[in-house]
Image (cartoon, rainbow, N blue to C red; front, side):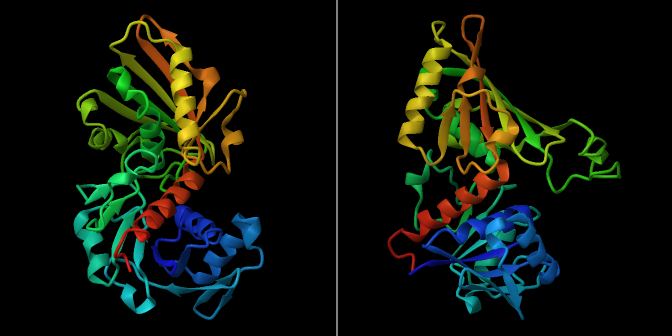
Length: 333
């Protein structure tokens, strides 16, 4: 039987999850919960995805590719009785509710598991990064985070390199602007976030720093992460600088190691030797693509790496991957 998802939040990432789910024979979206007008949400789907031009709204149901999805209106976790709609796993894609306490409300409302589409505020049962630690999942996991697109990209670049003896990590994501930013100057949550996303490079914090050592304990206290939100709608890049204990490290060795990792996990990590720019990565479902031309060495043990990712598109795919991983565990149904 297919795993049935409930989506809470039908913004940018929620709509991408829905679109990608239609391509997956093992996953059905049974219900979508959002405070927006279903007619407008359907309109946005039609205009965002060419494959959904024939989608239609029939009463309270969204119909596409012969699949019916119930539209629901609710604001908070716990407001929807998920079990009444046959939902197995809830994906909370609101970007607003990130605590274990809030995630538990979905479970209390009938979901078997809940997957947070972002990094959490406090510790959940597990943060799952496909291609890194997905083999560690347990049927006992109830509250789960699929990380963030940046967390996935960074972890996949670090995994094959940790064995070389990393002594420090400095990561900056040059990130497309996000839906929580204003396009015009307007009072926001802080001074910089009050500035126009369409006109400025805006320094921002990155929650990745708080969680990466959970995946790689040997990097505890060795990582700093930051973000620059730039006036680009789609396509992001990691600028990663590493120091190694090995003074003989070189660019060719680093590139070769990551290329070999891409052969082992081709679904989530790749590489390119082309002189790409951000628009070239749009639509790529992989979590990160190494830019081999961007690998540089400074001094005896500093290496700079560039990795591209379509942050919304690839992360929607990873969230569905995580849902499918759990659905295949013994006793899930």
